Image 1: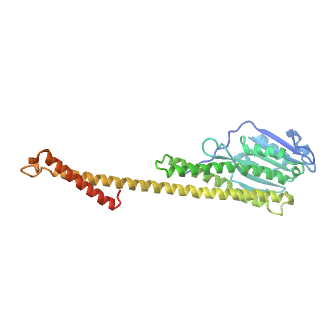
Image 2 (image 1 turned 60 degrees about the horizontal axis):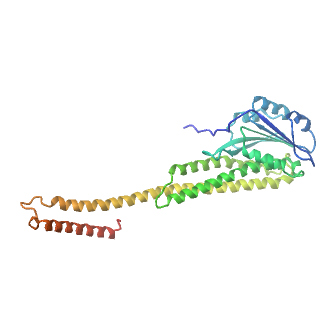
Image 3 (image 1 turned 60 degrees about the vertical axis):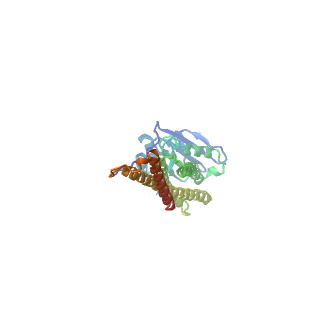
Length: 335
């Protein structure tokens, strides 16, 4: 069976946003043509965000930054799991960010990062709320922190990880509502909703779990790209990833337990229904036996001489037998 690929956000025209940070100066937006001029400057940190890149834009990245063709092929091909590859002088990182959570099932999109000594290049398809939030955070960051490329990576990755927490909270709330509806007197929930939650939790774990290895690599002390001052920030993001994974695993266990409980509830209610039907069948069998046999195989109908009184006696005896049967069934806890 073929695996369904998760779709990417709707693509549009290629768009490039370039943010330049200089020591002691506010963060500024510059034209893409100035990348070659400012990149060699000491003390600068450059962030190039490329949305919906095409072959021309990827070739521009190769010419300006010297990125390896294999990494650029991964950007063009999509379908990558979160990972980190180390090339001479820079890292190539793939993250996944959530989008489209308000309608339908959760979807995740790839964010490709090229992390160098004084620059970060992000490439993605469509508009991702996590990156928009990261841009606002970076523009509002203190000037002394904007001089470290490691802190820029922290801002981007922290925004991506934080985007998952509202999704996890929503799924937890849905699970609580399903459990309440499941054990109500008159259940009105849809089992398909529970399976949908399980699929979303599975998709979340597939997107988040590999990122643990990515940030664990950032914590290595032998990297020439990051300064020692940025490691506490990477540790913070790593802790967020672990907390997110713990929450996802707990909710997956809750979803699996809810599904098993749902099957048990259905089975128990079926048993209760069968018990009630058994009681009804016994009562009907008693009445049917007496009324069916009354007057058969006799030359004279029993109690016929008493008229209506005889019929009343027969009906009374029948109900007495039914009552005795109900009392016995109640003693046996069949109803």
